Image (cartoon, rainbow, N blue to C red):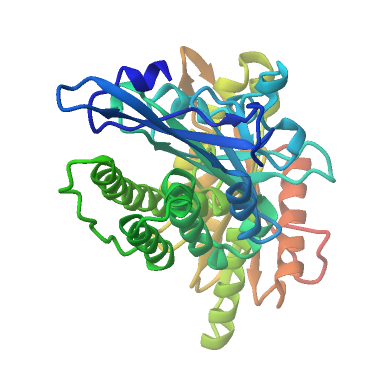
Length: 431
């Protein structure tokens, strides 16, 4: 009430979203509520009355969750980070019971959105147990309210299991996300208000929002009226433009999710899933062209002592140096990947003989044996490299990987800092 009384003629106040504890003859008790208020002024500017509308958001919250596939999880927080929507209902509106449960505690990058230093964020949460899969989540900061100095906003987020992102990266439900953002968030801030009123101008506003939710078509409403209806029309026009801008940010976030799902987050190299996909494609091409390819397993010698002695920060920087040196040793058409820890793989398509692969493997051994200076530390490592060729050693991916891995193991067993080529007759031997 006091905030509304401080407004000028034609201004609208939107409250924080909270549970309704007002006593009386209404159906909104203990339900999520958004209060919309505006002063009614006389010709001299004095306030005659206040118009306050309580908007029950319970149905809208359910719609936000119901419109998505079962694998998706929806999160919504206020501008402090308190959960308003959470997969576990006990986590939502904790502040109403004296418990502060913040979204930025579970998803660290969201802290930048809460502070106002970012507009969107994409993050991943590693699996805690076998029954708790890792998640990939995207969040966007959505301002609302006519008074910009209030800095009022909500944070909306979606999460999906990492396994589904990897398996179905081309079929992610971003269209569903876009429709949900347009229809759900728009309904959160405007459509519920429009549906509660019965005047014809407000009905036209509702129709405009429904059209925007279906195909993101911006319908500019007549905001020339000098009354509360005109103010609401102007607010709706601004909100539609904001949603279009946010959808563009989410499209950019989709590219970041694809990068995260297919590449090693530390080095930026292809991860195991992407590397094996390229290996299968290269073997198919080689079979069709009656050509050959080489697969190398590269394992660092002495990496763990360096990591233990100087710490993970130096170890991570060393892995980045190794990744760059490996790429410098191969052609642009070749693929270097990191499959975990200090293990790397190299794919050389279109080789003419084992000699071509040996030359590259020896080049890799020599390059990785050179000292590295990191944060003032003189670091020395080396590498054991195992080489296997298609079709000389194997005709399928699983067997080819076994030959290359065994050859790498034998190189390490022989003292490291060297390369070994698999023996055709015996997968457990190498030369």
